[in-house]
Structure formats: C-alpha cells, structure tokens
Length: 262
Image 1: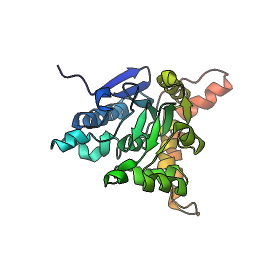
Image 2: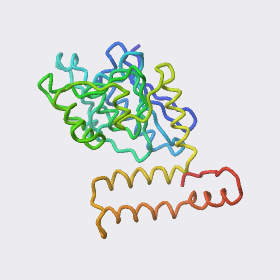
Image 3: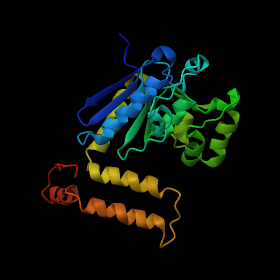
Image 4: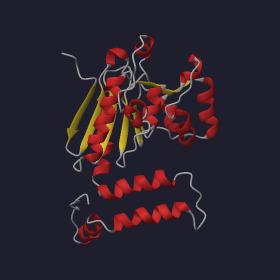
C-alpha cells in the first residue's frame, strides 16, 4: 500500500496539511501537488474550518521544492487539472481564509515559494529560506520572484534572488518575513497557538480583511481610486453579516461572542 504523500487533518476549526515525504525532503511531485490543492479546496469549502496550517513531515525539510529526481526520470509533477492551482497546489490558489506555514526545516526554492504563498510564517530554529534556482540555471518561477520583493525590502530580496544564497530564520524574522521563530520541537504547537489567536475572531471579518489586503495591495490610495472601491465593497459585506451584529451585542452583554460564520 502506498503511503499518503499529503496528510490532511481537522482539529476543531483548524486544518493541518502535512507534506509527507521526509525521505525525499518533502519534494513536490504530482501526488503532493494534487494533495495540497485538494486539501486547500476542502478547507475553503468547509465552513467549520477557520484557519489552516501547512507543514512538512520529519526534522530536515519543510519542502525542497520540485522533485528534480522525478523530473530527471521524465515524470511529470503536474497533476491533470492541477495547473490552475499553480505550483504545489498553492502558488496561484487563492483562499480567502488564513493559511499559516509552519516551516520545520529547509524551505529552499519551491519550499520558500510555498511559504511565501501563505499569510503567516512560524519557523523552526532549524529552518532556512532562499531561492537558489539561479545556481542551477533556472529561475524561481512559482511566485518567488513576484512575492519576495513584496515581503522584503527590495535590495534585501534582490540579494537573495541574484546570489541564490539562503537566509536564516532569525534573519528572516528581523526583516519581517517570518512572524515567529520557535524551538524546533514546539513548532506545530506554536503554529496552532497562532491559529487559535485567529479563530477566536469573527471568521467573516477575518476572511474579508484578508481579501481587502491582497486585492488592494499595491493599488494607489488616491481618492477616488480602485483601492477605496475595494475597501467599501468588502466592508459592506462584513456589515451585512450576522457576526457584525453579534460582536457589539456580546461586548455590551460582557460575554464571549458566538460567531455564526455568516
């Protein structure tokens, strides 16, 4: 029996997606690509899930990127129909709910691109980030060249991109690329703690806040502008929600809100 290359677990309102190929540094082949993409689809559609965590199995690697050994054998890493999701089922797969990368080791090349596609990053002290593709005569074409300069100062990002060198989790944290650096053995625990801080909030407000941030990112704030139109459009959705009424009511009654998620 072939083991599952992607594990998908639901813990209360948290979805945990684990790349389960530690013997291959959690490299992405067609099964991993499809497994992550399918898990994210389920997460998006399940109204009981309010936050997701993506991590890797084992102690060495979060994800080593594309499975170059499979490619060398002539195997395709593109699952049928999975191209729409982008690399690893996530690079171009927008989900309007929070996703946390729990980076448990090396996240080089495609591994860094997966982490960059997430909203938050919790990194083990054993983690490493980088886009070494130029060292191999290729480029970080799965979003790394687009996302890294948006998440780091341009000169810092360009040094990583043009030299192909890696960045420690401590340095990544200093530049704001990583939210938290934690002891390796506490990684998943700390990622879940961060998820718990998110899911106490109204899920509609959280998802719409994410939408506004990403859809308005890099759009000029001149008034009137498309950015303010986006802001108003999505704000109206929140104010029409049941949760927008429950929040003030719970505050006035001095109790915890009971979010309906709608």
